[in-house]
Length: 201
Image 1: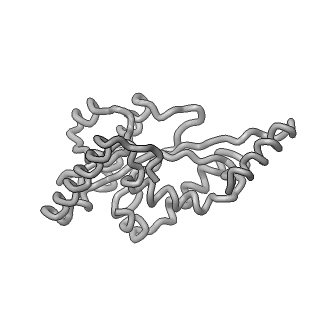
Image 2: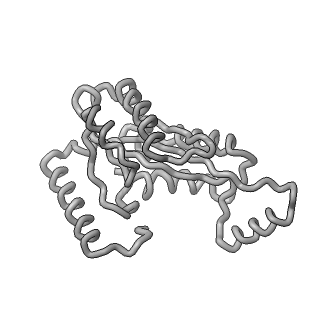
């Protein structure tokens, strides 16, 4: 699942961070209860099952003038072992850059205050997989960040657990519009139980 050949230093970084986390959990068994993890995913209005099918779809889309090109919808999702804390739909044409992600974090920070008052009072930890640099914002808000090794989606709960749940439902479906993708994704997220998300950790 790691889409890159890692260097020796990167492999050592992965190992050290994993060992450190295991040691922290051993010392503080409730540590995972404090973690809110997040990541972004991009979902197409049509998710072809195979590369060949994708090629066929591309050929069809080029030959039919009236055929609308496929669109993509981005989502930024924050969740913990209790459930979804916040899910943000990325506006059409928007990239998840530093400025945009900072605005998302501002909304998320308020969501933690409203939805997780105990964590808000006692402290919590943000886990983000290679997100844009927002160190100044995190420092100003006194948000503790769980370090994540580079090029390691297999260590991110969103990538190895949450997003596959969404994609498995949307697989082989053809939504007519981005709005349909938004609605279906929100429906899937709302249907997830605490047990589903607890298993991500």
